[in-house]
Image: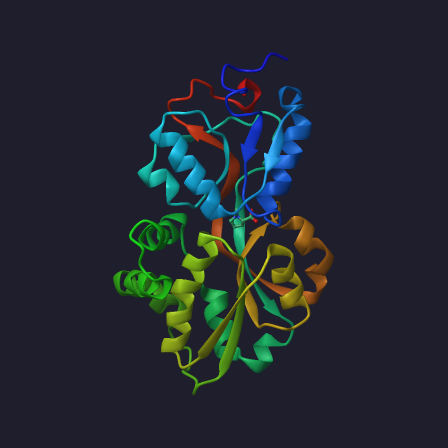
Length: 268
Ligand code: PBE
């Protein structure tokens, strides 16, 4: 399989994020699934470092291939494209689910109900993420701005739910901007209902064990069934899945700048 004109310049490297992220496993799968990627490696770093490398490549019009996903703000400001994935290494678009620890409904029925009602779209999350990453707004302020502009949506989650008096509620989340945007919105919603919300930021695998072990009350950023399947499947029976808060709009893939003259992972 002939390498593209870009492969050498990219050092046969896909630029990735933190090793625990589900997308890194999918990218490793792609290196196995595509013959033309036999000699390639996946470089792990962090979301911030990956974006910095991407922005530098864009500035110099150099080739780069990154692990990319939706929802994300990066597609708003930059001319990027997903490469076709004929082998399906990155799976179909999926949901983002809300998970509750066992016993949550008894212990915090009000928060349970809000989380059960919580539903939004990729555009909603991307708005907050843009504010957060591009404008540099604090995540809770960005979340509050979104709440102020989307009162009807938020009311549809909280309508008929009683307020509480300073109960502590713990949410676990991962290290990515998607998760920060989600908690940046949900924390003010719950605080407005009288909760005192505590956040724990951990690596992907610990998000799932924290809910399963009852160390935290909930998690609102479970990318399923694929991205976090390896973390979720073993603990599935130890948590309560409250369903999708985002329906079928979460997607993964390999992403390159528009100016690269290739369309498929097979062309790399
Ligand atoms: N992500 C964002 C995460 C989930 C949320 C796609 C980078 C991942 O585990 O790959």
